[in-house]
Length: 384
Image (cartoon, rainbow, N blue to C red; front, side):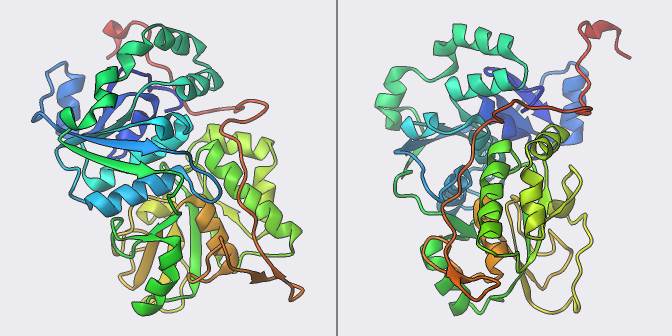
């Protein structure tokens, strides 16, 4: 998203979350190594003509609700198989109100519903992101052909005639969601989650909370989560669970450090890990007294299948937005609802967490010393 993606293009990648680039208006598909080799060798890449699933987003998110909640809701509707053999297109006023990186979060987790890829039409949120990441020329070119980077008006007016399946989600009414355990399509609105924890006898104590990964480590994600950590410090609260932050890129990590956001996490006991898949694929030092003991963790990652995050079949892993994960880290309890519940601080005083605040893009711009990015050759004919 930061370097290679552009509106109207097509990308083939060997990472299952390559569809992240759909947040920038790109057809981006994850494939196996053999298919990728064919593409790199200049051979045609073929697939069965996909179905089209249209998801209309009305209204606008506010408060604790985040883009992650859209895809968690969709996963609950379509299940882990419902998007198989389909391209999922998001449209509507709700889509246009969402940041580019928020769109990317939704497209990223299209992999968890089996979708070939997911896609948003080009808009000015994408243009702003392109400019913020040093690609103003690309934004200008996209603006010049904007009508070709979005469906025709009649598609929006009568989506049922053009999509094989249509779903509508009202963002004004969308609750924060927590999905799991053991599968990303077991969807729980936050208002029903505490009851589900008790009814199913899932471990109520939260042992580890983890935010970041390719799904949720944008500047917006981190700034909103940091705002919760900041107010927690002001209200004399600390994280009651082990709490980790995994930046998705060096560009984001360097910028959030520059802007002081890492200090907010440190103040409540958060630990910053390397810019990598990390705990999402089990690459971390999970400390637990008994590996056979039932326990709960929550992440802002994408997959929560048994043994996925820490190799332990006894771990009940849940998935939510980074904002909700941060709030749970402070509570240390899965029955906590930050929208209505109070917490006792270090002085024994009951306090409530305020709604998260944040910005889509860094106010003073992105910064980095070494992004680890190598631009493609201007003339690829000489590449060996």
